[in-house]
Structures are given as structure tokens and as C-alpha cells.
Length: 292
Length: 231
Ligand SMILES: Nc1ncnc2c1ncn2[C@@H]1O[C@H](COP(=O)(O)OP(=O)(O)OP(=O)(O)O)[C@@H](O)[C@H]1O
Ligand SMILES: [Mg+2]
Image 1 (cartoon, each protein chain N blue to C red):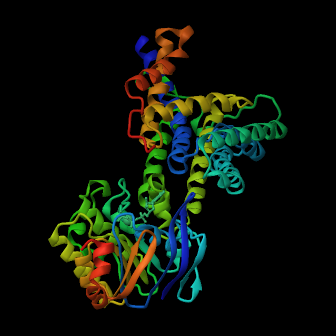
Image 2: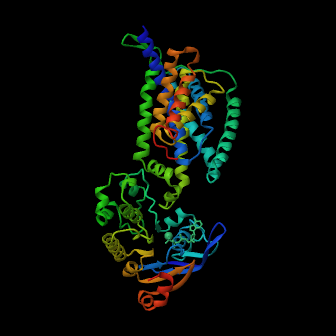
Image 3: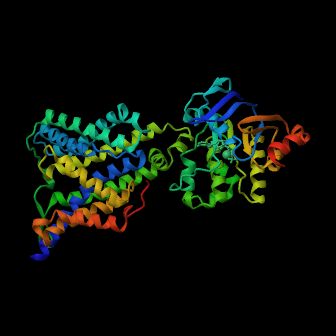
């Protein structure tokens, strides 16, 4: 019984970690390549969740409706991100970080008002795709199928990011631009295109995180705040710009959160913050190498 | 092929290049000689658009490129090998070359071809750029520009800090490039080595061109060499 509870908390923590990883990977990628601390990353996540809700409910009871939402909502978010990057952010790359933070914070306010206009202040929810509803029994313990699904998606996203950054031209250029953007220009490449591509990927990941979290939570205004704080902490503990660091940070955060419940339920929320704070005390630049 | 007319360049308020003019003809190897702080690097950076000149003009194949951003200058066919190499440390040797590869007008150079020039790069293909020695990074920096198939190559002190043997190897490669029709503008302090490959020479000092002429003319000008080159 105790062991079963432990296992199920572990699963909750791991699946939460996968969402955190997907969102943080996008944040850290943009931070590494563009050197932009994107404060509206959380808003993109929220828009991903709301878009998934709208797409899934528009399509009604078709068994594939949520799958379609998973595939399309992140694309919608990626395009919104790209539009902001191309029209506004691109003018600010030469400016200091404070400007970038203020600007992206400003975008947060605008996007959040737009979300309020489009979806209102009500709580929304969607169900997981039919095959992922209910529980499976693993070693005598019932576990939500949707959590198992998230557990599989996280590593796939990690693999996808690896392939993108190591097997595609734009991905390799993004890694190069993270270190020396002027030298990338000296290869005859318009760095702005690389930045646009990297931002698109970052926004896509925020949207994907939002779409995937939608069936497991209530979709509401304000869901952007928590994720933003968590993602920034994770990215910092992992090492700025390091995607594998984001994975480690997310695992640390998700697991301490869910296992903390077993230790001290009323104060479970403090465990992940304690864990990340201790990591930063010992390794101020994060667990893995930062590109900053 | 390349024509610079009276450029003035600044870093912020400090005036670094004064009325610099020079010309590089198709197929030539032209040397820009000068001691530390003379303005060699700044001249090359001005051509590339990294430090755009505030006055004067840069022409390439009859087209004005003075105010083009660096990536557009490269697209015109001018590739720059910076003195500090600027290898991407997290990318492998192969990846460093891959992202620079470009068929170009000539389409002469590709990865296999530069591996023939610099066999050591082939053997370290999968190693991270940051783990190469200084000399190996210099070779990689040159190779990286070559696979872009430049029409004009700007080399900034490619011989600096290299062992005599390696200097000879690089000089041979420059001659080979010239034989294949590449035009080279070479900024150097190593007068003795540079004169072995140069067709014509410019001497720069304190941001001003002090001499230009053929290698023989420079050899005859004892005073210039003493005054500006310390040889
Ligand atoms: N980034 C910079 N900011 C301000 N001044 C600079 C900068 N870079 C170079 N300078 C100055 O411009 C002048 C010319 O420098 P430059 O680098 O062009 O010389 P160089 O001939 O390439 O010398 P070296 O052989 O040492 O590389 C020097 O007086 C130098 O101090
Ligand atoms: Mg120099």
C-alpha cells in the first residue's frame, strides 16, 4: 500500500517533470541562442492550452479530436511567437537584457489580455484522447494512462531536440550562433533567420507543453505565472541554454514536488524550491555547462 | 577585383584608419604588412562591414559594398578568416565545415578537398572544435572559409604563432589556392614569410598606407622596411 502510493507519486512527479521539461527546453533554447530571457514564454504555454481546448471542443466527440489539438495547437502558438519575434523582438537584439525583459514582460500583459478577450475568465477543461483515459494497472497499482503517455512524450521531445540541433542545418547554425553570432554572419548567413527559427522552436515547445497539460489540469488565466517561475528556476538550475540541463532541472523539480507530498504534505510546495536553491548554492552556474 | 578608396574607420570616437586606399586584382596575392596596432585587422573588418567605414568606398567587382552587412559581403564572395580563428567550440570539426559549405561560383572546394589540404582535420573530424590545438584551429578556420568557395579570401595573420614547418605548409597552401585562381588579401606581420607568396605589398602604419609596390620594390626600400616594419 505504502509502496503503491510511493510509485504513483513517483509517476505523478515524472509526468509533471515531462511537461516542465518541454516548456523549459523551449525557454532555455531561446535563452541560449538569442540571449533573450523570454518572459512571455508562460503566456505562450497558456495559449497552447486554451487553443488545444478550443480545437478539441470544436471538433466535438470525434476520437481523434484531442490528437488533432495536440498537433495543431503548438503550431498556432509557434506562429504567434514568430509574429512577435519578427515584428518587435528582432529590433531589440542589440539592446541590454533589462530592455529585453521589460519588453517581453510587456508582451505578457498584452497576450494575457487577449486570452481574456478570447476565452474569458472561466475554467476550462478537456479529456485526454479516449485511448488514454482511465487507468492501467501496473504491478498491482492503478496508474493514469495519460501520465504514462506523458512519460513517453518527454524523451521523444528530448530526442527530437537533439536531432534538430545536431542533424539539421538550422539547428547546427543555432548552436553556432549561441556562441558567436558575428562569426555566423561571417559565414554568409543572415543571423536573423537563425533567430527566427530558434524562436519558432522555442514557442512551439511552450505551446506543446500547454497543449499536453490541458487534459490533466484546469485551463485558466493565470496558469502562465506558475509555469514561468518554475521554468526559469529549472533553466537556471540546469545551466542557461543547456537542454539536457533543462531535463535534469525538470526531473529534480517534478520529483521533489511530488515526493515532498509524502514527507510533509502541507508544505510540499517548498521542496522543489529548496532543491533548486541548494543546487544553485553549490553550483551557481547550474548543473550542466551554461552557454552564457 | 577589390578596390578600397579613401576609407576612414572609427571605433567609437577613436579614429583608426585614415584615408586608406588599396586595390586587389583578380588572381593576385596581395599583402598588407604592418606591426602591432597598425590597422591591418581594422582594414579587413572594414571591408567585411564589421566596422563600416564612415568615409570612403569599398568596391567589389565594380559593385559598391561599403554599407552592406557582413553576411551580404560574404554572399558576394568575400570570406574572412579572423586572426583569433573563432572556431565554434561546441561544434565538431566536421560541423564547423558543414555550416560554412556553399557551392559558390567555382564550386572547387568541398570538405574532401580541404581534408586533402589539411589531413590533420580529417583525422579529427568528429572532435569538438574547442579541443583542437591553436595551429589546428588556424587550419580549420582557413578550411572553413575555403569550403564557402570564396572569390576573394581575406586572411588575418594566418601564420602568427605557428611553427616554421606549419608556416611553410600554409604558405604552400596559399600558393596552391592562387594557382587554382583564388584571390587573396593577406594581412601579416611576418614580413619574411609573407613576401614569399605576395605579388604586391601595401605597408600600413598608424592607420595610414605608407607604401605600396611590388615585392622587389619593397626589398629595395630599406628605409620603409626599417621605419614601419622593424626588419
Ligand atoms: N575594438 C576596438 N576598440 C577600440 N580600439 C581598437 C579596437 N580594436 C583595435 N583598436 C585600435 O585600433 C588600432 C588598429 O588596430 P588593429 O587591430 O587594426 O591593428 P593590427 O594591425 O591588426 O594589429 P595586430 O598585428 O596587433 O593584430 C589600434 O590602435 C588598436 O588599439
Ligand atoms: Mg590584427
